[in-house]
Structures are given as structure tokens and as C-alpha cells.
Image (tube, rainbow, N blue to C red):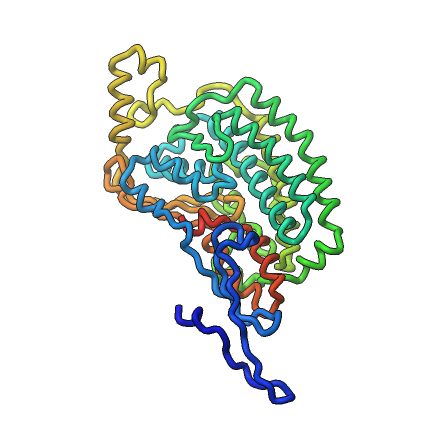
Length: 408
């Protein structure tokens, strides 16, 4: 970190003999456009960025280490606190990883799978709304942010109706859902499907052909296809650079192979291309949600696995055997077979992966998270080098990071 302490650095001389020098500028960690507590040390030649060094760790809470001392089910609320703008997606990704570790993927009821797909895609939409809205607000477009947050509020209401929480959901369970979907769930979501496209079109009219928005994002924060692949970038950033990789298509989970949807891609690799990809991804999510509602079956919502799934509350209150089983599962957790697994999902920001090592007890021996925000942040120095200071704001917004996931 010695480089951070350097305030100036000679770059040679101008034609008149005066020395060129860089200036070190701290952007953050409390800067409003860094989307959390991110510090970026900029080395500037005038307004031109010669080098950018991100500094993270201001929000570190040791989530992965904490999860090694608690049961699998108790790990679930910690996943909320990573990408808290799409916590339902983090929840489902973790639950799928544990189900893979247990080898019970085929035991999960179809109703639970379809419900998780619907909730996952709602989470994708809510994440992209705040990503686009916050990026636009950083660049001065306040109205678009208000339109985005209005629709995000509708998704909050759906989440609250389903699980009682709005931001940190902690909703699914190993084996399925903790409770059945409300009776008016389908009608409420279908009403959202009718209303949301109108607002999406309004956001499109506000930004897509807006000269100021185009001027601030087109040709800005460019990353090539080769650079993105080398850095392990995923999500809309990778697809915005022309790589049609999506975990839902490449390694399907939750029967995504049975849903019809397209992978939006662009070839420019700039902030504008990433914006277009997110806009189209929301439209594709609407397609998936509609298919899920059309095929949402009746029947059980959680697997019949007494050694893993908690008994019904009514049985806990009336049957001694159920009370004992409830106590043992909550206190000790369910045992998992020794071994290790990795499972990834297509989170709104990219590939979210959970690596779990089991020693046969009710707690993870080791848990590691591959967070897309953390990996995608690597692209920032290359994106902004040679650009203006103002382009750093556009670059960070176009990456769409959440520092809760970067730091964990």
C-alpha cells in the first residue's frame, strides 16, 4: 500500500519545460456514488485517470467464517446481508447448494421449484431497477430513479405478502418453502406483470435516447470480451461485452431449461451496453415469471424428509415426537454427508457460487462464497484508465456493485 501514500509523481516535462505530475485523489469511502463504503484512490493527470486502486474491507463482517459455527439453516439470514438488494436470490442460491450437498434435488416438490423461479426473477428485476436507477441518479437523472423505486416498492409488497419481510427475506428452506404461497399470490404477481411494462417503457423513454445519458455512458468504461473473460467477469457486464454466458442456460437449475427466454447481449462493452442488457433482462424475467405462473402446480410445497425438514407447527404443539424432532433439528441441525460441493446461480449481478465442505455434522466445516460484485469490481481499474474523473462515477454505477457482497 506504499503507492497510496504518494501524492505526486513526475511524468516528464511539458513543452515549456514545466514538470508534469500526477495528483492522488481519494474517492470515498463515503462518496455517494461509490454505492457503499468503497474507497477508490485515483492518480490523475489533470482530469485524466492514470491509475485507479480500489480499497475494500470497510464493511467486512466475516460472514463465511460465522457460518462455520452455526447450522445450515441458521446460515440463511447471513446470505441476506450480502447482496441485500436481491436477498431472495442469495437465499435460493444457498438453499440449492445445501440441497445438492444432501443429494435431495429430486425430492423437492414441483410447486416449490416453480415458486422459487418466480421469486428469483422478481429479485432480478428489483436488483436491476435499483442498479439502473442509482446509476442514472449518480449521473444526474433523478426522475428515472423515482420510476425505478416505484416499481421496486411493488416487488417489496409481493415479498412481504409471501414471507412477511421486504428487504432481508430469509424465505426458502432446505427442502422447499416454509409455508405455502398465499391464495392471492398469482393474482398479485399477474397484476404486477400488467403494470410493470408501462413503467419499463417510461424508463426506456427517459434514458435510452436521452442525449445526456448517451453522452455519459456510450463509449465510457469499456471492457473488451477478452478482458472480461480473463478477469472472470460475469452477469450483464460480460454479456454487455459480447459473451452470451448465463448460468441458467449453461448449467440449468430449478428446471430453467424448461423455460423459454433469451440471453440479451451487446458487443460494445461500455456502460451504455450494460444498461441495455439490464433493461432487456427485466423483459426476459417477465417472460419467465409468466410461464411460471401458468405452470404453477398444486400440491406439497416442501419435501417429506423428517430428518431434514421441520415438522408442522400444529404437530409441534400437539405431538411429543414432533416437538422432540423440532428441538433436535433447530439445536443440532441436520447431518450432511462428508464431502464438498460447489453450486452457482445466475444472480442479477453475475454468477453467485457457494462452495461448501461438510465433515458430516450439522454445521458447514468450510463455506466460501463466489460473489459476483467482488469479482466484477476487478474490472474497474481497466475501465477508467485513460478516462475522465467523471467517468469513474459512470463506471462504478455500470458495474452495479453491492459492498455487502464485496466485503462479506
